[in-house]
Amino acid sequence: MCGIIGIVGVHSVQERLIDSLKRLEYRGYDSAGVAGIVDGHVQRRRAAGKIRALEAVLVADPLNATVGIGHTRWATHGAPTTRNAHPQTAGRVTLVHNGIIENYADLRDMLKAEGRTFESETDTEVIAALIDFELGSGKPPLGALKAALDQLRGAYAIGVLIDGEDDLILGARKGSPLVVGYGDGEMFLGSDALAVGPFTNRIAYLEEGDYVAIDHKSAKIFDRNGAAAPRPVRTVAASAALVDKGNYRHFMEKEIHDQPEGCQRTIAAYVDTLTERAAMPGGVDFANLSRIQIVACGTSYIAGLLGKYLIEHLADLPVDVEIASEFRYRQPALRADALVIAMSQSGETADTLAALRYCQARGMPSACVVNAIESTMAREVDVVWPIHCGPEIGVASTKAFTAQISVLTALAVAAARARGRVDSAEEQRLVRVLLGAPRLIAESIDLEDAVKAVAVEISKARDVLYLGRGPMYPLALEGALKLKEISYIHAEGYAAGELKHGPIALVDEQTPIVILAPFDSYFEKSASNMSEVMARGGQVVFITDPEGQRHAPAGARVVVTAPQCDPLIAPLVMAAPIQLLAYYVAVQKGADVDQPRNLAKSVTVE
Ligand code: M6R
Image (cartoon, rainbow, N blue to C red; front, side):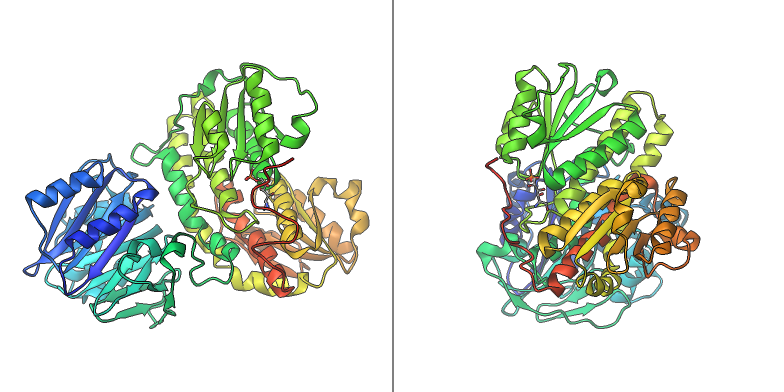
């Protein structure tokens, strides 16, 4: 997926931009480009295909610049052509961009009405045009950048050159990471530490909403409110750059924050943003499939359970989900015209692999949703649906979980369309909703401080109950699993409707009850469960959305209010608060968050 490098130097940047782009090849891409300021004006060189095609362009037409930006593009808005490759230019502004701008069509229409024309199909060109528009109204570069950022809706990281500014690169991040590299008389901007790795190991990680102006000597960083916000400069070992913790204390914390970008990259792989259609590669004939059998363990099993809710609801396609260790030994009844999907972050989990092979041996076609694309599962299935969230190091799975749900949501939409359960207008609406998820996940992660305060209370508990209905039921299971595995507090996830069938006996003043209830079709029932719990002295932590907060029965001890969203993406948006809750409880208790006792990241034995 897309990668960014920027250099404000005193020596030629051409070879170094290419060197950096080669290091970003691991992210996957289908076109590449560079731009630099030559004699006060921006020049671009771009090519479809691999970096060697760009190198050939540069041999024929070198870029003699000391300030430049480079990009590897993984196509989202528009085909992987030279015209759509980055950098994109509009007027004085040339920029590279990772991410998705949700409101690009509206902005483009607004700019067209101002007489502007567009040469590419990209959302990126719209950002360039918007900044140029703001420059045209007399704002200085940083002011124009900030004014443009305030109009963007989406998740992004950008690097910007401005014609006539030969000692300046602007950058900004929201939902996609961006780092500033501090060199010796030169400065760098990169989409990750690896991008700037060849030039410096002194790095500052921008925080969510930050924007920056760098010249060859310094960086001025501002937070989302426009206040100066110097970020700590850290020394990062080059070999560790890919799995560096950034500004975070633990990998789990970093990986929770990685989720907007991980989901954005994953969603972009399974939808066509131009036609707004879901596009599952692999040629599975969802229209004629009789059934899907999902096999998985742990958090991947819970992601599969969410997939069942999504796929059955949207596509009317039966889905069975089973814990792989049970499935493999109980001689389940299988159909050769059903599809088995193994869900696994590692692709090596012994029970999941055995369950997959069990199905394959009975003639079932197979697929896997996997992070490690070189894994055994990925090698053994007919169709691989990778998640694109990057390596997950924390033993407690977080970003792999939301990336798995992203794939299954796209699958549900694709299957619904193939089976005639939604028309193309509804499919487009659903795809737009899904494309908006990374921004809302970022907003949900912003609840961190509120969740931290709840965690102090929960860390004193001996037992915690998590309740939810519909898609919030699997999320309740996930909340309980996260809490158990990293904080060692006993926790149970229950379908809220099951409360009266047993767990209500556990309700007392010492047992916090986390109720997950966005304002959806299940809300009234969940609110009744909340009242039942409170009537028995239970201490409720209510995780909801603004509408839910308005309609909630009074008396919840704590309310965490996630952003309002379409029910399709509620599991994605509500995941961060429960992950953060487990994380901060574990931190509060001084537990080893990334390496919890007795657990392994990849369980390759049964
Ligand atoms: O690599 P996998 O997704 O197959 O791993 C499955 C489980 O071992 C894993 O999800 C485990 O439950 C995590 N520790 C949960 O955080």
